[in-house]
Image (cartoon, rainbow, N blue to C red; front, side, top):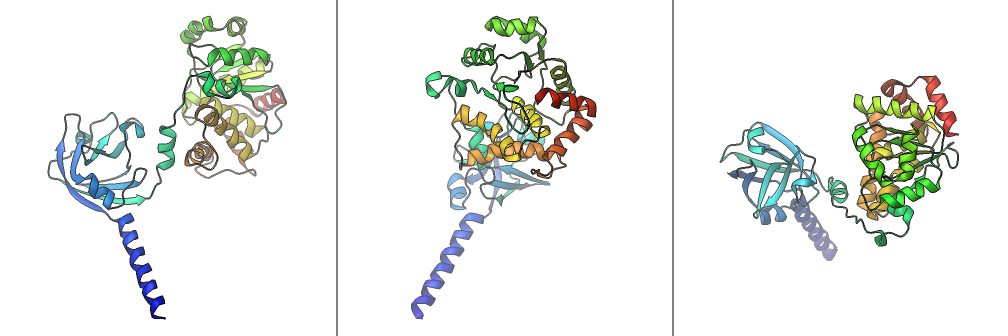
Length: 355
């Protein structure tokens, strides 16, 4: 009985010590501001390690009147341009803005107190995984031409075979382009929705593929030069033009951007959703691009993070709520009606082209 009590006390003590090491906060001061506005604290890297702070943690920075929730990362590029971060530099904890001046934006003063507390353990790890993925442009590093070119048919729900394809750009100065071009020509593509090029870029890129040039000169390519923010008016306006172009032209269709990964992934997912594709099939098709480029494997933080990207995109269309098989079609149709501006008749014509 006494041995059990001792073991229990030891367990509680160990647990308490572990908990303190994981959740301990840090308090220090602003020690230095460099010429770029990066703000050094007097908190040493060893102190952060002892407090249980690890890369990928989300923390709160409290100083002056400010309360910032930021990730603890290795590099400035681990966050989007203009976003704040916490990192190690010169053995000290550094507050900074990626491509920005932290001290000016937040009116930092030397000697100002800084408190750092944990918001969520490891919550940024998936994002770090994605931002630090490595790919090559060497064909022999990939198992097939199809994988290297990120080429595949979109076959979900009621989309007919040999009707819709996606891939990387088949006509640019890129090592993947010749492989993509051969696959596109082999699939007998008749209509191309080019999500990435401007008019000037399209004209310049014709020289890399005679097949692509022939489609363009015949009026079977629309170039949309669009971004990736599906809630922006520009994205919606250009997407409407692309879908109307598909209605007016015959399949097989090719949807591509530069990598065939993000913009092409969003457009393919929308089309699959209105054609009764299932959620997991739609998400999986989006993830395949990251498998093809970066060899991302199921069950890893990177795989989960990529899945979250496409899940969040549909949640954006659904007032922040996740979608499932019962409502994904309705959510996509609502987006096409209310944001993109397609009529019910136009949506029916688009669906008819894909069947």
